[in-house]
Length: 463
Image (cartoon, rainbow, N blue to C red; front, side, top):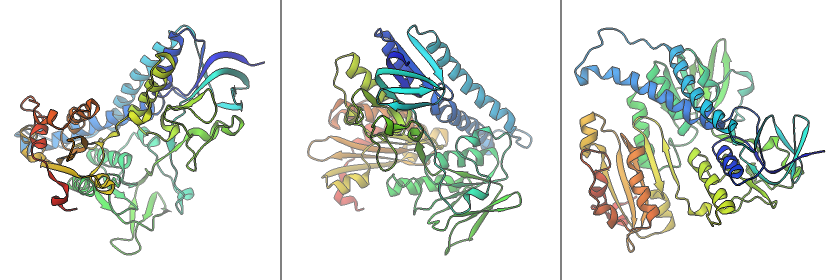
């Protein structure tokens, strides 16, 4: 006999808890199933711990600027990795603890720890117990992908999860994967004192960005002493005693990297394979993501998929927006859509990279008659005053209408400054809104109106 609920939420990541709270607030009896820790990837092994480590690494790096900034510490810098890890863990536990207290105090919400498995379209089993509901919401997230590289089964390796538990600084960290996760950890551990090499199969880092952005990111990495190996078409792993050998290239440069530790950072795999979705008739695509429509409904009536597991966004903010869409449509009589969302993301190296809307490559490929403006960060007073002038700004606008198409900012405070552009895009206002805005001096954002006043036809800028 199955225990009945109005709604069952599987997964307590960024969408699941807030949706559970809205549903019980609407008078429903709700079951929330989580197989591990409340808060999911972001709180436990993603944004919260990694950005805590980014902050540690930045603080440590700033102490190395003594000669430039006019001070001296009077001794050698010593990094205590155990204390670094402890601080990170405190931040995580405080965040998760607040979530646990909030959810635990909600009347009408039952929380069950265990792995859920569908046995029918609207029935699951958890720990041998059966539960059924009219509505199901899947928010099961994703995990680090283990690539099918030669030798991967014969060497010790780290993932974005296990590397968080290191209580010592690696002698030499080889990072396989030159995208967001890999580069953040590369810079973190370089600043903590490790020798670091990034090995990327493709021709450039962060390949989804524009080439000029990729090149600038690579410059940031190399400026900190991080070795970057691109076009690494012959990646294979080998163990040599306590060392991990990463074979890199058949043609250019040293053929292999000898490291003390190897981090595999080549993407994430949705956690849908444990749900027995076939028993519910829920469709998945060729990559294992749950297929959803523009309102996040799956192929089975009464079942929605939110967050990383649906392939419609791989970020905390998109997962939370998935919750907002579903809650608004179900409980508020609204008609929100995933397609209303403007793509936006950030790379949390230092300086950070933020990108919204379309890239220059996408605009050119779409054949849009557009204008573009760029400015180096060295022309931003705030950046110069901080002595942090790496990077640049880029703005893309449709020529005829003035519609803002997208923007990229690589530079100090880029992840905050870009939001004035993003908000202008959501408002639907033309670029004139930015051009006539008066921003506070001195800030990074104050250059955005000036940037918007210097648009030039894209076809005149080459590329």
